[in-house]
Length: 375
Image 1 (tube, rainbow, N blue to C red):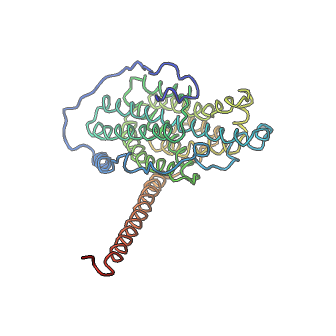
Image 2 (tube, helix red, strand yellow):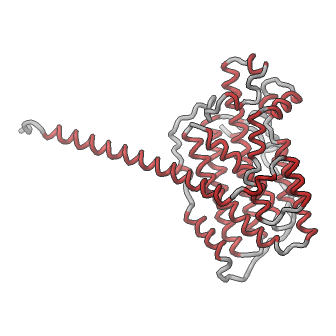
């Protein structure tokens, strides 16, 4: 069965071609480069992992409750629509919402892989090319595991959201070498990290928790890379050049806040689009979710030096300006610790099982040795 057969809607042409502009840049300067970036490159090499082996794919997943989220997370909860739904309808709704969310993660990770490859091609500094090469591999691994989770565990895939595709296309079509950093590393990956973290912290299902935690461990390095590269470069730009990039950030943030709502899931259940949008806007869960989407973006934007008056006004309008004071380093350290704790718990459980198997084998051996040997 191909993925195409699992799509909830016709995904159209199986491929998407984005005309690329800009130059491929080589560097004949093979000196040591920036110590911080090379240290991150070394960490990127050291932290490579195999999605086939690190993830315990034997863990069962109920496709109709893949994340174990409370019912009040559904935008239609406690509405007349919810009251009219049968138990089967509610189970299907949970499945479709999880499929929609993880499908956008999947499409975003493929976009991140392409953007990382573009950075390898277009960034002028060799140390940045080195790190971007490790990130390209990371993003391929993420797309692999999200695709596998959707295909094998949920059995349903949604096409890429039009607005996510629009932002991704704008990022890739821009000829300036720093735009894949800004569009992908700061905006799209910042949004994804917040979404991953929210689900990671509330799900009680071990397989999706593993997937989200291990992906976030990688993404913490990617955000650090984008901050380093852009902070250095943006110090050199003129006021006008910085304002152009701030305009891109403002438009991208409004796009993500206002349009990534998943209303297509509700319309699949017969709810008119206008009502689906209103239900999504009024949902307490979605209001919290939309604000948390910026928990990684706003402090990163401030850190790299895009903090002009118009950008700050936009963040005041969105109600997220205070997030600029959050510590990205602390958030990323927590992402690392959660993944390492999951590993430690898994290894401890595996060691416990091995010891039990050895003890059982010893006990069986001792029992076999008792009595008179046959002649």
